[in-house]
Image (cartoon, rainbow, N blue to C red; front, side, top):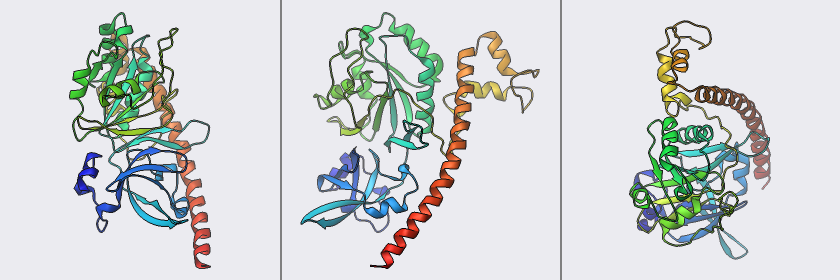
Length: 356
């Protein structure tokens, strides 16, 4: 039984006190009202109980693909139903602002060790969008790596790799082709037996194709490449966790059109990792409170003047800072409202429970 859990990434030290391993499972798929889980009893369906809706403060409290959960069993209509009683603490989480105008976080994948950012090479690489992906990946608590896919469609893969390296800040970069299988062996070597890796990127980047190659069969549905822009017709509609035959776990995700930042407390400043070069220049400024505008001795202004720091990268850094500050303000207001709603729900739930 324990071996099946370990196959899905379970580590014994994560077992909560007083909880038997028979009650532990990992979420492998997430749908609207239910989850596919893998535990000691194999593949099962589960859902959250009614009280979960009362005790949670936001969607982030709900299970996500990659989560480890504690289960209980209930019988309904002569059938055994698996209920998610609790989500175990996450070691990492790739979180984005959910699509739409509502301030809400969406967990793309939980408890991942690496984030593989897949960028296709059939067109010029959008390094500004890549910087956004890198920031979110570092913020997740996992380590990012960059995969330059569809290398067979590039006229200058080496040049594109150099452009990516200029903003990657030492993040490993891999070139991959589904046609020639260039780089496949190197990618396999980057996946350790205890890794859980989430694949992220835009629609048609080739995430599912690469995952199928790693699995060794067409487990995830893909479609033909369009002849006009070389993009695959996007077919991934949900997140899915898959165990590789060679060891390790991968998570496929739908393509992302727009990756909006999500604010979380206790995170490192964005300059710590994805903009570490800018952080170093900021620390080199003569004044500690330098605004990098008209002050003398400004290392940022000097780096811009010499070309060591591109204006585009600096502008994008400022843009992300503004977006992050705006997300924080919205999040603070949302937390206050959600806390009020939560106490109202708990009060109603307590009254209903007391009448039973």
